[in-house]
Amino acid sequence: MKKFFTVIGGMGSLATESYVHLLNERTPTKNDQDYLDYILVNHATVPDRTAHILDNSKPSFLPPLLEDIKQQSLLKPEFMVMICNTAHYYYKELQAATDIPLIHMPHMAISVMKKKYPNAKKIGLIATKGTIADHVYENEISDAGFEYSLGDQEVQDKVESLIYDDIKIKGEMNDPKYFDILKTMHDKFDCDVIVLGCTELSFAQEKAPDHPYQVIDGQGIIADKSIEFAEKIRRGEKIDFTKIY
Image (cartoon, rainbow, N blue to C red; front, side):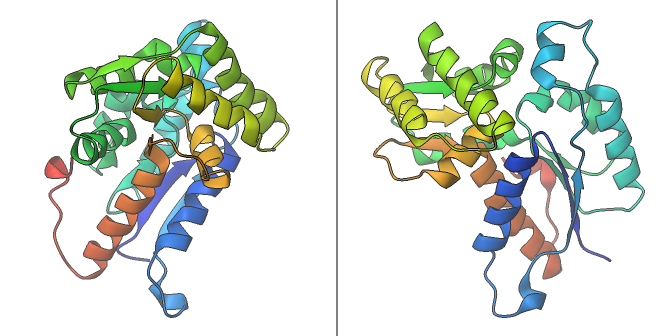
């Protein structure tokens, strides 16, 4: 297979499945051959990202991801995407291990947000404790020139419960909990745009999009960008991956 890309996923598998569903659903097709060529690495046994970030004595997720990156690099994909926001904690180390462009999902998400909502007054960020602790989205939002809010402990507890208790453990979506989180960030913390800083929250958005709040879904954005890049490559166009954000 030539002119394909690689998806580093499995963190978690339902979120990766959501990305693949969006990828296939949003790709313009008239027949089987119009779908995109890609390799999916569903590495479900990668150690928990948040646990390691909060306590470095816990197993690191860097070695298995480095192994995935190096293995896939041998196959010469055109680019790679990594379907886990929290795993971008080691983005620099992963990109340094390969010459293949690894798209930075949080950076891409905030780049799109800045263009879509240039007049936003305050950005809400909801994510795992690991993503909050590694400041990847906070730094991106600040660098883009926006004020932001993380909510409070009550919001964080609900976010963690939705991600872990409902989606990761039960494999279920809890619409009322998701809507309540968005409503609280909008009404109580005056956030006019809310960034979904976890792919399980992207899964929630895919399953329950019927709400009035403006959200930035990094996984949905990276799905759209995957389609854009893959179709350009299929047409023989060159992409300067240093200028995509």
